[in-house]
Image 1 (cartoon, rainbow, N blue to C red):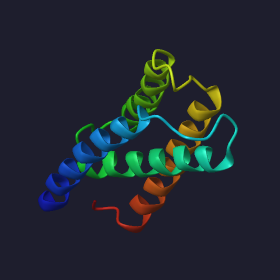
Image 2: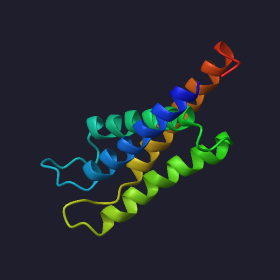
Image 3: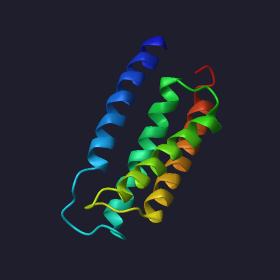
Image 4: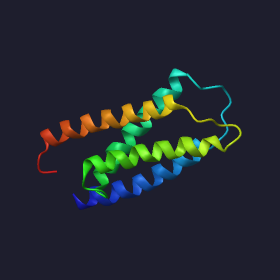
Length: 116
């Protein structure tokens, strides 16, 4: 289990760096209500929620979910100041839905493997 935690922490660090870099890159198409963009937000935050939980950096799940959502909100706030990006509430909503799906997955996993 210790190996999973350490591996997850490294993967989490790399993931946060990569998501942050990609969040501030210029995009070619207008993606304000693009379904693919919202699906990407959903999947990224589902993934971040699960990998954050596996890393066991924060043991209180509610706090973990709040921090992951705070990261998504921070990305959107920073995008206000980037000329080729914009703040979108729908992105935050997609992030929230991804975190919620991650929460459901985690609770299902804990039921299957209660010792973890």
